[in-house]
Length: 185
Image 1 (cartoon, rainbow, N blue to C red):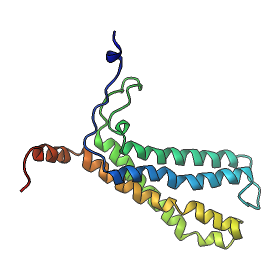
Image 2: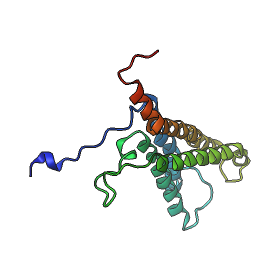
Image 3: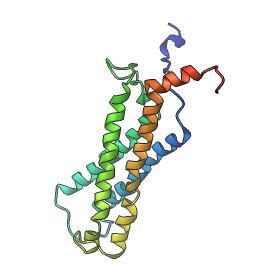
């Protein structure tokens, strides 16, 4: 067996990924990063929290950081080949094409969810300013600065999801086939 037979060739993506979509997809994990780092600082005792964490809270807080960053990283699948074809190393499914709606529906629901969560949190953040959570002064401003980028997560994810859907929809591939080699009118 030659090396050429061992190499799997990835199928081409449905269409070119717009440069803005790639940039937006890479920004999404960066939007979630500051809040995750702030939560790690909270667990480490560096965030200026005047209270004491219950024994189960550090594990919960760290898990929240890991899970939110993992979900944010999934947005990269909307602009990468592994978001269109299951990677070959996955048993039974490797190499199969991912149905467009199997990616679009969860991504759209996720965009709606994070937009709703962070909009609600922003609108209700004055409670923090009144000391409901025990944060005051610079510690409170650190929370605002670290959580503000999360407001961009939902709209960025929605835009990347729409670009993914347009690129992979049958109408998009039909349009590209029809216009290929023909002059525009």
